[in-house]
Structure formats: structure tokens, C-alpha cells
Amino acid sequence: MKAIGRWTGRALLVLIAAVVLYECWIFAHVIWWTHANPDTTRFMALQQAALRKLDPNVEIKHQWVPYARISRHLKQAVVAAEDDRFVDHDGFDWEGIQTALEKNQRRGRAVAGGSTISQQLAKNLFLSPERSYFRKAQEAIITLMIELTWSKRRILEVYLNVVEWGRGVFGAEAAARHYYGIPAAALNAEQAARLAVMLPNPRRYEKHFGAWLAAHARRIQARMHRSAVP
Image (cartoon, rainbow, N blue to C red; front, side, top):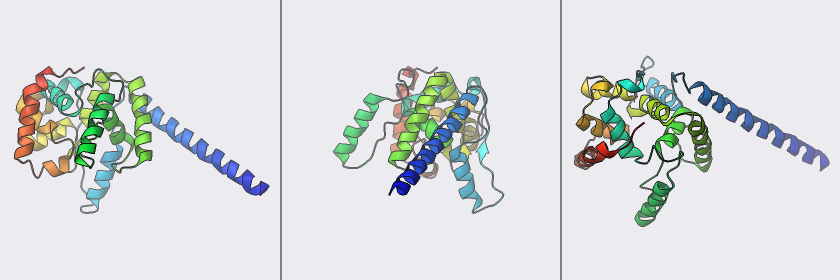
């Protein structure tokens, strides 16, 4: 029994050490990306692997552009659609989370999430789309790392450059060229609003941009000028 106890204790120490090393690895990347730009993300790698099962030579569409070369319309539209209190919260919109919980309770199923741009960025950079308590806990830890070390401007810049906007399409520049044939800097208010409302499910909405989504885009366009961006 004593031997079992010793081995259990050692195994626990190894597990704790592995977790600490993993968190340090993530934090090192977060620090590095304070100024350096990520070449890829976990979501990009997963999507490319899936696409290469169908075509071994396929490449995802992604081109980094600096914050100044992304249309202000798109910045405001994304904040209005995804996280209207982005500049004010510390990574977690507790009011939004409460609203989402109440909405889900009324519907009897999960229809709203309440995740902030910072949380979505943490997930995109390091995690996967799978739903689990472990992933949500890890997402929260990474969100804190990002909020503690990056400015809001940097968070929005990286998010707009890496978020998925369709099957194999990542970032504002690739999205603007894929859907409109123009650079991200040239997006107008209507185009920006339509791109912003696609973000919850871009692979579905690129194929089925129906009447409800078009109406939602018009609502976002009508109020996005009030959204504060860094």
C-alpha cells in the first residue's frame, strides 16, 4: 500500500509539472506575440488538416495586415456583433454571460454563449472547437494571460487577423478578398456588417446567408457607429 501511495504521489507530481510546463509554454507564446505576429493558430492547423484529407496540396487563405490597414467599419461591426463592451471589460463580460445564461434557460438549450473577443481569440490561438469544462477553464486562463499582457488594440488586431471567416479563409484580408475582391482597408459599412455577422458560424453562413442573417447585418450596421474600438 505504501508503494502504491508513493507511485500515486509521484504520478501526481509529474502531472502537475506537465501542466505547469504547458501553461508556461502558452504564456511564452503570448509574451512573444505581444509584438510578433502569429504565423498560424490551432484553428488554422485543424482546418488545414481537415482540408488536406480531401486535397493534399490545399492551402488556407490567410494574409496578415496591420491594424491601420483594416477598415474601421469592420472593427466597429465586429465589436458591435461580437462584444459591444470590448474596450471596457477585463476579458470577461459578466453581464453578457448572465444574459446568455438567462436566454439559454428560457429556450431550454444553448443558443447564446456570452464569450468575449478576448476569449474567442484565446480559443482560436491555442485550443479547439470542442466543448468541455476543461477547454473552458483553459480558455479562461489564456484569456487572463492575454488581457494582462496585450493592449486592447493588439487583441483586436490579432483577432481580426486570425479569426475564421469561411472554409479555409482566415483573417480580415483574406475574407475581404474572398467575398468582395478588395483589401480589408476598403470594406464599407455594409460589407463589414455582413462579414461580422458571419463569425459565429462562418462555414455555414458562407453557403447560406439567408434573410434572417441579412436582417441581422442591417441591425449591426445601424448601430455599429456607436461601438468604441481601440
